[in-house]
Image 1 (cartoon, rainbow, N blue to C red):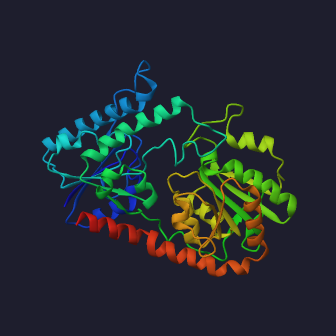
Image 2 (cartoon, one colour):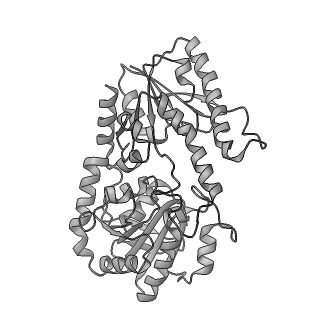
Image 3 (cartoon, rainbow, N blue to C red):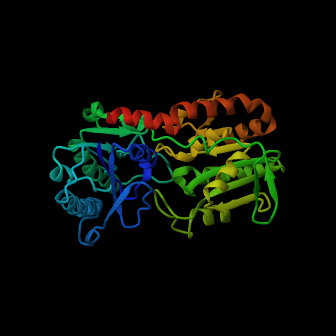
Length: 398
């Protein structure tokens, strides 16, 4: 089988699948990504780069669409040359969210195209407007509606599609649901696993282990979308109630979703200036190498995962795979994975008192969480590991 992967930051969500497909010598695999895409061993990598960005005079609702067209054009030029060289894929697997897949059917009309449908935007019922601290204006609603023009074109031209969770599938228009299958790409549960003797060394030289009381929090970047303000306020309350808890906070100071605060350089600076925290027990670690990040999870007494109704983070599944006791927000799609009292605990995203109370319960009786931790790992291994994800994807390709 001849397979073309298309992802601006390849491999992205296709890492495990691309490795599995490329491991079969009967397959010919090529990937296409932007100049800064990391690529991966064993997969031939081609590069493209849009010639420019959206023009400043373009209506702001359409900046994303213009950038998508420019990306699609750049990809089409590379694929046209590839076709001249004799490569004709049987299947094109693409993340179409930035426009790269717009014109692949014009180059390869016979190829089967499978899209990774990560998200379809809504002004109500999902991330936008969820947090009352950030109300939507009419301008916001119009911008969101316009943003979906690209996603509708993508849905119309793909042959099949994959969404990582049932909730993310449900966001897409009902007319296209027959095209979309639910397959999570999976996390590496052979690497993300419990380690009872794990140690983590703080920047000041102190060493923490599973014998300490440790609350952990992880996000790519510390921001409202992932409940960072709610966590910091709850942490301050927890620290006032007990003196034996360390907080290990992993994440950068950029913005992945939403926007930066207007009155501070970043959300960490804003929240730590506004909320009284014990600096000797509050450890902002920034972004960590993967093995150090795993050590943080492996020594966690209670792991907090909060999110708007939005895309599910790999970090939640990795925390469960490590055997963390997760206290998560009662939001979609978290509740699709985490079940209260069975493999984790759920609290209202905005209920600080409930979060603190649940953390207190977990910290007071860690032995009572043993069965829950084991169940969390078992379910991730079975349903969200690389093996499960690859099997479903390869079945789809077959």
